View 1 (cartoon, rainbow, N blue to C red):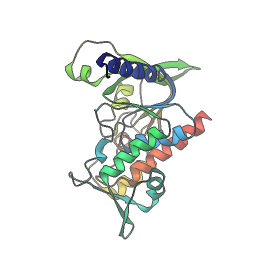
View 2: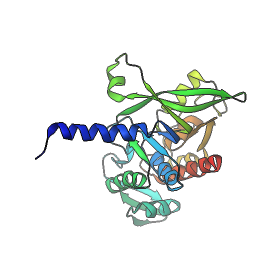
View 3: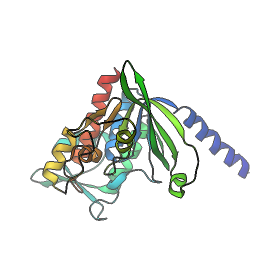
Length: 260
């Protein structure tokens, strides 16, 4: 016999338990694109308490659609060890190019980071950050979150807060967290102190700079993936994702050094 009320009770109990356990964590990540999920896996593998907040119903960012909805992506040889760790299949296309199925890649990134122990909440938006001054240093120490549906409807509903030792902006092109930080906390660690702005597509340069630009942009806040290039004024790169994966691995390594 299945009781509808019991079904509801179990859903609410499981969600409540997971959410309460996610209120004070090591690393909070805004955005469940490929870079954010790769970062989450490596951080969770190291025993850190990691939670991703994804605005949309389905995690994965732009990887699902491959190139113009063709379900295929390109990666470079340097990123193959990451694909191997997630169990993502690929084919050698020659001349240093490798192809993978975008649907397989995205689904295995989702499964991989959660199997490692990272938690993920979808339909939740990061609308603000927590800022505290300690030892004369202004630092980001958490996210302010709300339901995406509340945000989209423009309802006047107060949000909730998540405390974190480190926060990551992995929101891609919009750089949503960095925009809030500029408005409320001051300058970023960029030449102008502001968002330098994403440049037009140039895969060769964009793939290199997305890794180079990965790092801390404000005390307690790191950027990874396409957000890195949008913050520092580098090109977008289109449906080639090796740099995204390597950026996620790099930011995890940097954060582990800081936390440890």
